[in-house]
Each structure stands twice: as structure tokens, then as C-alpha cells.
Length: 214
Image 1 (cartoon, one colour):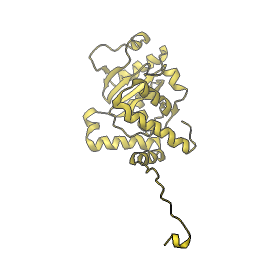
Image 2: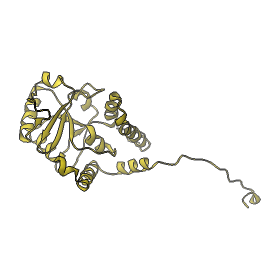
Image 3: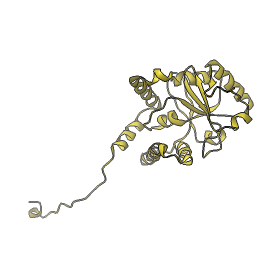
Image 4: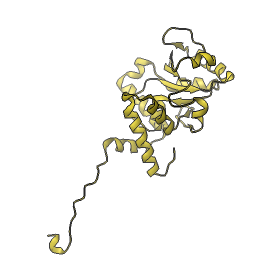
């Protein structure tokens, strides 16, 4: 019928957008606050938040009250930037300047932070630099101090591309950029983290098409 009318109907195969791409695009339309709150709502539905006592807002507010300088990294930072993944703790890279470490010590004291391995917590630069990750338990959930995340040179490196993101409840932490978060995961070369890395790379591509540089 079409040919009789003098037209051809060519068959062209086009790649179908994956469900994950659709979800990531929807995530990018949400505010950082909505992304963080959606995580907490999911944890509440699963009962995970109560099980781990994870309250990121309480931890971030304590850090703000003591004027601690840091960059938010890890799972929550990636979620704020648009990924979909579970997380039950807070990861951050603090400035290792003496005054900031004193403020950090006071903030950690407020939330009853202790080392997960039971050892004494020392916040001098040498002690922090002696381990790649310091896992802490607090009254508001797990907290990891990561002085120099894989693939980076620490706080001064990360803060250049970090951005202040309003997450609600009066907190606006510095959050590592999509590029830096991808750099960390790539340096770890961990197969379990490959899905998160692929999401970050796809977010970068999607934002470029929207004219957003992150």
C-alpha cells in the first residue's frame, strides 16, 4: 500500500533506552534534598534505618554546629548526585588542618563516636594518615573518615570541584563532584562497585546532553 503511493518505509533499528537510563534521568530532575529523602524513605520501608540507627541529618548537623570542614563522599554523595544504590552510613574526607581536626573531635564527641574495632580514636594528622579508612560507630549510625580516598589527594583535591548541596533540615554539605566520585571508584578497581561507576559515567553523559557540567 505504501509502495503503491510512491513511498518506502525503511526499517531502522534504534537502541532502546534502558530502564536504568530512564531512572537516572528521573533522578536528575529531582533536587538533591529529594534524592536524599527518598533514600531515607526506602530505608524506613525496609526497616534498615532503625536497625542501623542511620540518621545522616543528625550527623551533618553535628558537624555543622562545630564548623567542621569536609567533603562528603561515598554512597550518600553518589545518591545526592543521582545514582541509585543502598547506603547505611556517612563517608567524609575532612580537612587535616589542626584547627579543623579539633572541631571534628568535638563533633564526634557530641555524637558519641567510637572506633568500630574498639581501639582508641586519635585525630592527629599522622594517625589519620596511617589508615586509609577509619570506621566509626555513632549514636546516629556508621561514619567513615577517609583522609585520602583512592585516586585523590585528599580534601584539598576534592574541594576544588565539590559543590554545596542543600539536603534539607538546614544542612548544605560540600559534596564531591560526579567526576571525583567516579575517579575514586575507578581507582578502587572493585567489581562490586562497577554498577555505581557505570551509573556515574552515564550521569555525566546525560548531563552533557542537557548542557550541565559537573
